[in-house]
Length: 208
Picture (cartoon, rainbow, N blue to C red):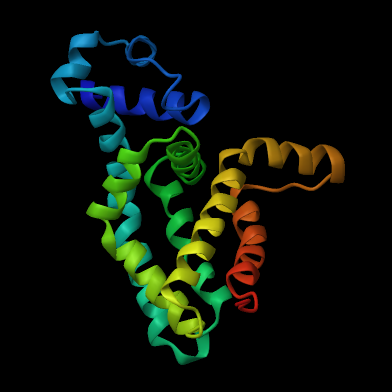
C-alpha cells in the first residue's frame, strides 16, 4: 500500500470517530505509520487532506446518485417524494463495495462536516459535485411543484440536519435498537427508516 493511501485510510477512521477538528495530523501519521512530512508532501494541509478524503468517496457516489435521481425524474410512476429519497439508498450502499464499511464511514464523515462547522467542505461538495444537489432539488420540485425555492431551501436544510444527526450517531442508534428492542439493525436499516420520515417532512402542507 502506498503512503498516500495509508494516510487516507488512517484519516477516514479517525475523522469519522473523533471529528475533523479534534483529530490531529500527528494522530493520523501515527496510525498510518508515516512521518508528518508525508502529509505535507501529498496533501499540503489538513484541509486539503479532508477534501481528498471526501473526494474519493464522492467520485464513487456522484455518478450513481446523479443517475438515480435522473431516473426518478424520468419515470412518471415515481413522481413522489419518497421515491426521490429512495434514490439515495443503492448509491450509498454501493460505497460498501468500494470500501469495507464505506457507507457508514462516508455518512459519519458527512455528518462531521456539518457538526464540526467545516464550511469549506460544504462549499467543496456543492462546487465540485453540482449534479447531486441540482438534481435533488429538481426532483423535489417535480414531486411537489407547489414548493417555492425558499420552501425547498428550508425543508432541505431541516432534512439535512435530521440526516446528519442520525448518520453521525448510527453506531449508537444500532446499539440502542439492539439493547432496547432486540432489533438487529444495520446501516441499510437506518437509512430505510429515515426515508419515510424526511419525505413526509419535505412533503408537509405549505403554511403561509
